[in-house]
Image (cartoon, rainbow, N blue to C red; front, side, top):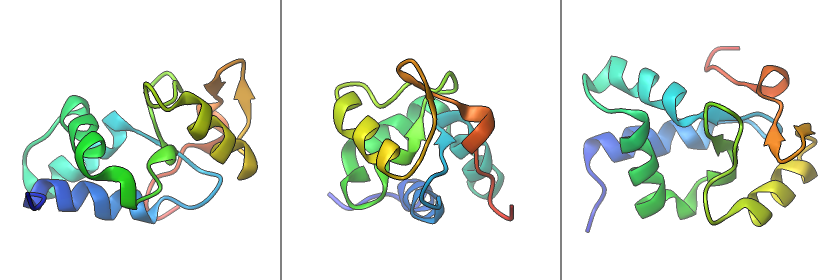
Length: 102
């Protein structure tokens, strides 16, 4: 099954997240909603679960800095290798949050 236009917009945005930076599901939803008129953090999570294997999926975290459910070990290792700081098991979002154009 091919990704929808919405899914393609999510994946294109995730591909742009630079190494060492992260975005939350909600941030992605907000930006994609500006161009498509729809979507939510939950929808972004669904897109990532279905199609995110080919993009830097580990750079997408919850709004509280939690890692993708079921992929915490691998995502954490990848993010740490990129120099992303953690507080316990959560990403320090204030230090590494990314918005396009920054």
